[in-house]
Amino acid sequence: MDERVKRETVQTEKKQGSAKSATANEQAAEKKRFREAALAARDSLTTKQRRDYSEMIIKNLTTLSCYQDAAAILTYISFRSEVDTFHLLKRAFTDKKAVFAPKVMGKEMAFYRIFSVDDLSTGYRGILEPANGQSFSEWSADCMSQCTLICLPGAAFDRACHRIGYGGGFYDRYLEGLQQGGEHVNAEACLQADTDAAKQLRMKCMTVALAYSCQIFDEIPWETHDIRPEQIITETEIIG
Image 1 (tube, rainbow, N blue to C red):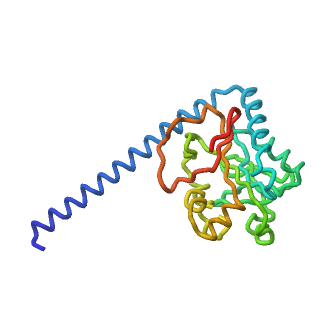
Image 2 (cartoon, rainbow, N blue to C red):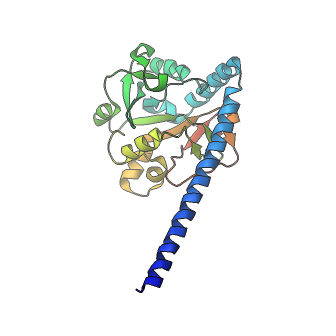
Image 3 (spheres, helix red, strand yellow):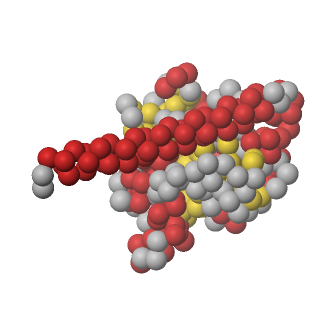
């Protein structure tokens, strides 16, 4: 290859790289726009609206077979204007479910069992977390045949169940790790894969997101690696 061809090849590769970078930046900017709009709408709800809507969302969730059949509930602990999961915790404890809450460690997250809200203390960014205890991986090793429900938070969603999180990627990494057999279910890849392992996990594991209706858009930007819950539960409907 002569020098002229080399230079042209390098220039072409640079242009392609710049185009990919521009596309990625545009996607990130678009996601940020939807995230900010959804969070602003969520924050604008009154305290009474958030309380009432949260109760309705948890009531909608607990009527579903994915909750009723689940032996274990993995749920985020609500913070600021998120759908209040303390309603869910109270119901799950009453229903004798094994309840697990997330704990952030660096860039990773793991779920640990709690038996009451007293097992939570201030952790990552002021969010309540379990201090320690039995991890979900330890519990599930002895309960392989049990059904599990994973409740996801998020900023914005659409009617195809795409999700925009808060930007940290904790749930993406955690669910991907579950798919690979560790504690850390890429729901999109695993739940749609046509393998025996995926089918088995699909029967045992259900992912739902809890959101107010003001967080739902007709369509949001998404990427193939983004997790997509199987259902979204709002105060007015169940999507998915």
